[in-house]
Length: 320
Ligand code: FO1
Image 1 (cartoon, rainbow, N blue to C red):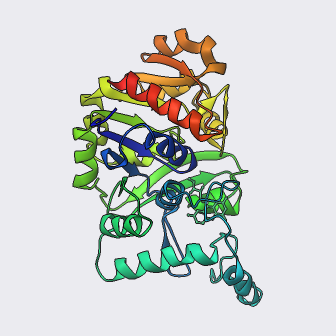
Image 2 (image 1 turned 45 degrees about the vertical axis):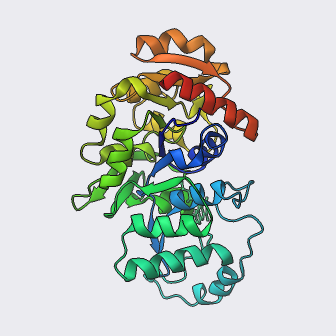
């Protein structure tokens, strides 16, 4: 499939695994990922961009395969040393937040990113430098160079930052509301151009609300996608009514959506012509089509690289 330019709207683990398969069927230099930054957080004074890092480490073959985030073979000496200070932290202080697992080698990424942002570099520039350090050929683009924060209202806690919901509370609390808070964040021109100019756009199998939602919330993105809807293909992150990783199924239900491929189709039908669903959802083809999307059935659970590659091939065929 040489010469096919592909842009992937990406969240974390599911998107990263899809990208790893995609680069085995198209040239990596023809692939751009526009990555969610709504999960980004500041800890210990460091800017942490979990979805960008998960895509980077996965494409570099350096991701921890069990966790799906962070580096394989990681050590945790710095985090362990912080526990000494967490023990004396006064009430009301957020110093030494040891609930968020920053590994020793992973810390280098956040130190570098934070230093470069402090020098005035944009997140797009720093992300390209980090990708070059990991010898990636894929273009990784943050969706925006502005701050946009995903804020989750959970029962009993009120509105809290995304990582407090996801990691500190282990996404084990009902979600009442999700919003994307920014001071007029705009997509980067590079992200918009990639979506406009590629032959196929893929909406990765990521959480539609908190991974793809922040990208779609940026002004103009939905309009660009809708304008080229025929060559936009979404992969359902819901398989047989459940999310393979993370809280997408519960979150969809709690926010009044149907946690099924039909529910996913209702969320994506304005921006994508095709929904790729897993074989276990073969019985839902008519429902997806009734919801307004073409439906392609294949194996979508990327338990091994060959399955991710076959899925990428099917997705590209559907988009061209
Ligand atoms: N996820 C966790 O469940 N626990 C962690 O301690 C954690 C640390 C972490 C550090 C760096 C990084 O890049 C990602 C990290 N993640 C962790 C993953 C991340 O919180 C989520 O998977 C994404 O934000 C959701 O896509």
